[in-house]
Image 1 (cartoon, rainbow, N blue to C red):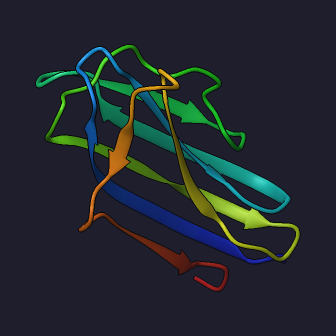
Image 2: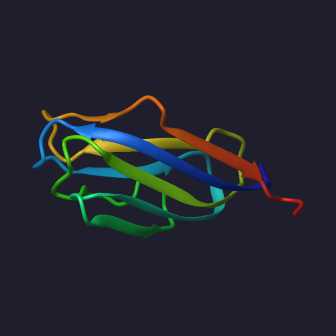
Length: 115
């Protein structure tokens, strides 16, 4: 609580079908400041970009993905107003069609309160 963190996640993922989109976000405890960008694949040459200030945003997914070779990048700054864990979250656009985060994905969280 009361600490400010910079965070960045890089996620490789697959989609069960090219017509299955996704959404990528974060969730966590109460925060006095939360600003982040989530970017993720639409196809081989374009991406969805969201500038966000709330957990579990955006509310809806994009409409497509590659079946392999997708990426998601989420980066931002948070000042926690309660103790807890900042978590990466994702969802499939289609409830019966999987989005799968792959091994080798990574993230980092750096305390920047005293910088």
